[in-house]
Length: 366
Image (cartoon, rainbow, N blue to C red; front, side, top):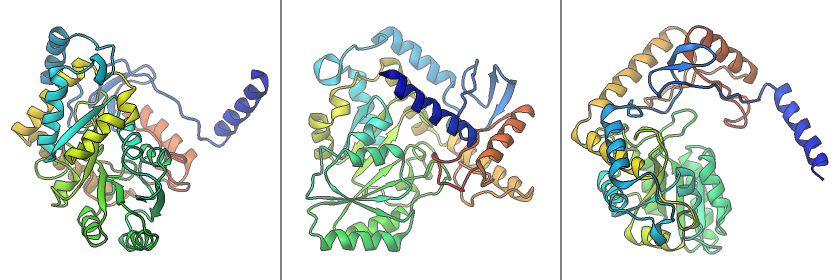
């Protein structure tokens, strides 16, 4: 039986390779950092990790992880509601809520699970989800699992968002929620969250943002897009990750209104049926939040580095997407060229990766 499927898969894989879209994984043999060691090219400068603040191998973070490993063990071998909630899990949820200015927080094994498990417990066929066209795949999949009616607005287009809201109101949808990435992971575009919140107020809608590429460094104190756009307190649901700026290990969370989080604890399937986040990650994440609360030095340095890099790349004649975010796409518009460019850069000791369809829209490779 497998022979037929195998032939189909082999053909598909060959088509991916022929189109220049086959993804290869380079092997790193060092801790994550600005400089890393690879099997393929030796020591290289790293320009493509999401280690925005350099916390993945920060000595204070490593120390906290090791201490928690000794005090709380390696794993919990349980989901949260059976035998998997330690004191530090509750502490981290409280600290995340405090950092973000929300009422409560729930932890997940991954940010993908946070987005995948947020819609179905809250909304049904009587409700409307209005989603940005370029939202992360985890949001798209989460919406698919929900019976709510789906509306999609053109990327970061407030006029089209308003039209979709008007359509949802006209259709008599009970609850309406606008969903957007805070910062879009492929091009660094920052959502117009202030305008989104204004439209939400006008059309009696909720607002949800994914802060995976914002929390820790965007805004004056690194609280994220809602701080950057001066709308703290106006966002109902915030999802995020511990796997990028906040140390880069793994784990996700949903933060927001008290009753929303309480329902997720009772009904969110990825939370109910996935193991507890490992204690060492929890302990390290608590230390990360302490570091970010004590000082803005790391996010300030990132902001300075980003400005410098953007200015120099523009002066050198590269086509980069305008903005302030540390995600800086160098536009090449061709998938094969993007891969060849990345390979040549590796030869020069600079680690970058080409992005192309289906990770980004066709024709926008970089």
